[in-house]
Length: 143
Ligand SMILES: Nc1ncnc2c1ncn2[C@@H]1O[C@H](COP(=O)(O)OP(=O)(O)OP(=O)(O)O)[C@@H](O)[C@H]1O
Image (cartoon, helix red, strand yellow):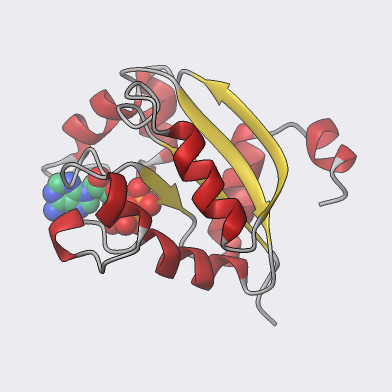
């Protein structure tokens, strides 16, 4: 059975340009609830760890430079079928391919500056929630 949580990151640029509130509002009105949320800045080596599966790809350095370039907001979201539904809500990785009404269509400016991340599986969601939130923070939210 599909899990009821996913991990999102509102990426640099979207946060810097004052789009955080609008994106969080869109997420909430789409039926997600915020179980935990924090704003922080990743070190380059932390961005490399988070995106380790892409190590060696041509865009890896640009991606991890970008993800460590400024504040991000990470959140644990809950809803039934959270991972799959959230991937649909955020839209395609490349905003020029994203459908109308998706968060990337509305807020992304390029394939790198694509505004938002969503876990791609329940296993990734578990790993990513552990990456950003301590056991104590997660226990407090009953997740
Ligand atoms: N071909 C590419 N050229 C440039 N950047 C890319 C490319 N493929 C992926 N990326 C960047 O790497 C990130 C991670 O890639 P991934 O394939 O996991 O896409 P995603 O799951 O849609 O994005 P995210 O993991 O950020 O939610 C993308 O968000 C994008 O910014």
